[in-house]
Length: 194
Image (tube, rainbow, N blue to C red; front, side, top):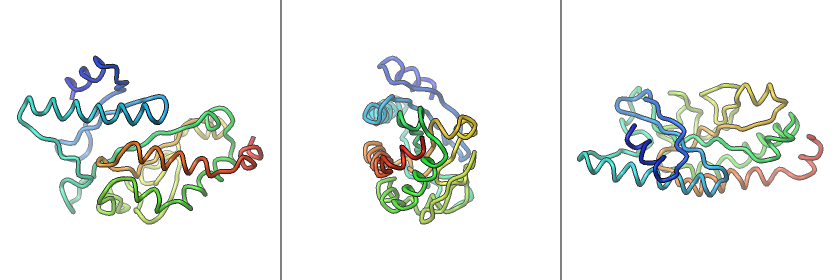
């Protein structure tokens, strides 16, 4: 994992960090790309570099979202932290509530692009929300969208974390659906929130 981090940095991928996860042999790495296309590009390239690196050692990567099956172990996600200029600069409680209502309304559109077999991972156990129910909560790892304390403390401004995308997800489709839902919150609601 450290060699992968070094490879990513060497080619200009904004690799932010690594950490061991809950399940056996499960690791996480964080990519920060400013802008949805750049973030998705960097995610694909980071996966490619990881795949090539593991070939060197004769090992493979299991990207399935529930690699250990129906056991008492966490699955594998690809959480998406997201924000827009409006979310960072204007925000507000009314806008946040309208945004969460839009995510709730578009629940199945999100699940459709958040990776295959997500019903096996998003069970309501192991730090997940059920796949068929939308929720959000402050610092809540069991919610669909986790709201950082800093978001609330800063007047409902900043980034949010969608915890539903899984490790097999297509980052372009995930980003596209998140942006589509954000765009569905009307300008009037944005102005009323300001």
